Amino acid sequence: MLDNLEKFCNLLREAAEINIDPLQRGGILTPEARAALQEWGDGYSVCDFCAGRLDRIKTPPVEEFVHEVLPEFLGTDEVRVTHGAREGKFAAMHALCEKGDWVVMDGNAHYTTVLAAERAGLRIEYVPSSKEPDYAISAEGFTEAIERAYEQKGNVSLAVLTYPDGNYGNLPDARAIADACHDYNVPLLLNGAYSIGRMPVNGRELGADIIVGSGHKSMAASGPVGVLGASEEYAKPIFRISSTKKNKEVELLGCTVRGAPLLTLMASFPAVVERVRRWQEEVDKARWFSAEMEKLGMIQQGERPHNHDLMFFLAENLYEISQRAKKGRYFLYRDLKERGICGIKPGLTRQFKLSTFGLGRVELEKVLQAFAEIIESYRPT
Ligand SMILES: *Cc1c(COP(=O)(O)O)cnc(C)c1O
Image 1 (cartoon, helix red, strand yellow):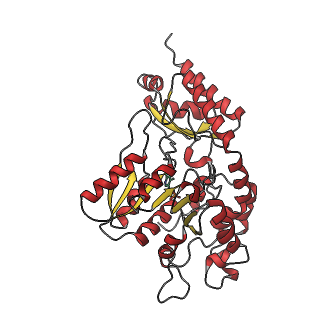
Image 2 (cartoon, rainbow, N blue to C red):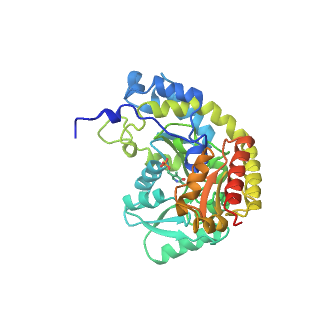
Image 3 (cartoon, rainbow, N blue to C red):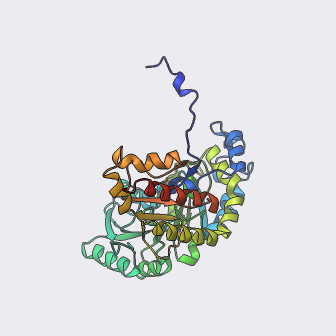
């Protein structure tokens, strides 16, 4: 096993010209971040001038980034860097909830919210969505779920809202949901993995007590890296200091991101702030793209008009083709790839999600053209 290791040495990445995978659109590095990745790639590279607290490093300017810039960007009192959105959710749950407590979460929640709760020993009460075609999540739903959890005995110590969710790209009324939770003194954690770094999100304005974001998902960082913010009240328990190890924050296991991923997050941050300002253009582009897809016979699910670049489509016409195409359901992946497009999972035809984020009109025209050509090429003669 330990000879013939050459194959690990020169790993090249094969990628199509246009990638419409929602997971990847917001994590593409800026040129500055790509340079930072090269410069800071060595292990523990950020620790040269550390006096024991990662978030207090002054060279490079981590302290200013974490303690001044990010709190303003997120609209929250305290921020720390994590390895991702999931680590932020787990840290908050582990700090704020007791084993056996209830956590209330929307039915569109990401699997990592469920795993974080499981790891923290919590019971889950879901807020069901309104089902097809909009899959909406309401404040009344949160109220009812909190009531249901209390009826089953035990404490409801946290609510989580996925904003937006990773399936339909829906943006529920976070403010109303926060108010509903606060009526029961339940803090709200806003999961902004798909929003922070793409669109304006202000924890304070939305009423979020805790907020998490994902650097590799939406902040043009290589990752794994994320952000965890909290209002003063909840920052205290979440970022509490060890009783034996001086200045080390327990939930973060002392230090989180100790090198290149953090530096890519910082290096691309000015461009991220800039792109957040242009969010309305992204929404307009997504709406236009959705309308064009529907002209080709596919139907967008979730909120209409849509408010996010992540979109879910039903495509009965492509499913019908898969029944008779060579290679069956893999035809769509193959035919898109031949046209320089990737990002829809191999084998999916009847329903799939995609993202238009950061793609120009010319590129999106190419994607639409590809769908049109593929559909046309299978038209029975
Ligand atoms: C991608 C995603 C996550 C996971 O983010 P990580 O930073 O990789 O942990 C969590 N929640 C939602 C809604 C996501 O889309």
